[in-house]
Image (cartoon, rainbow, N blue to C red; front, side):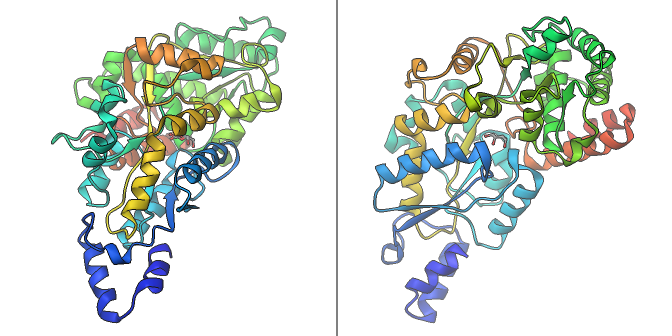
Length: 428
Ligand code: GAL
């Protein structure tokens, strides 16, 4: 693997090798092994391994190689959108076997807790200082990034909005429905799904496997409970066993009943494609779906619409992708160079224009982004912001794993009381 390959290249003797390995295992300190740095490449782990997701990463890699011509970008990622359990497990194994990528993508917020506790990632506070990053990221994001002791462990590349309903206006128009896709609440949304189904649209809502189901569930909880009570689910101030949660879970059950039975075999982007192709009228997904809709010259507002998911208008369900620096790596300078590009104005501009998200930096001109993205800037800057659970902002990986298991079981048995009890237990 990467580290071993480099070690083989530089190890002059077994004694030198064991010294390096013990330094790696203990976590490295900048400057303690200058003779072993090669600076020749940086290994970057993400789950943006194919299709539209890879386009953004490729662009960022291009900017990186322009900004740091002496260092080669090595794509060290794996398939598994959303940081699916498979891709997370793969990363975890790499970390535990001391074969870390130099830097890996993880969501800003609670998702980092387990990596910090495990000693797998390094404190980047000095890098923030050096690059003046505290001044360029919004306070709301800095609050997510800071641990209780004030340290910062990752550099955000972007801000995604999760609570979005994507719709095919032609399908809606054909069946006499409002083509804006805007729904004040879940009840009116469910009523339209029913109308579409009666009219012969077999699966009016497209849904994909695992994390997209948790994603759907989170937007239903937000739509039913509102921002404050939704927040309370993650900080313990909202009772998981309350009647509002039951009502949300009943709604969620109904939504699944209007979706494609192939959902467990389907990746998120295939579910988006069902809307593009007019096989479904709706999909609920974050704005990383934008490139799927914008492909082949399809136009926002005409060929597709995207609006806050039912009942969530005026709230921004937030997540941010961010990059860490692993402990025990040989090329800290190369990793720092990558993080510098991730945080740079140009990196954020080029990456986000493709990715569908908005820059985490506040000094990138919104005028350079498309019409949907302008609405995201507007909402992020003005609306209350809540944290996404499916995408690591609200809860640590260990809790999300339990929530995902509960959603997977529910998809099979449809038992609302059991789901509610499992969700309540996941918080403990
Ligand atoms: C999210 C991630 C996005 C996008 C999406 C689908 O968790 O933050 O950047 O990759 O999953 O894979």
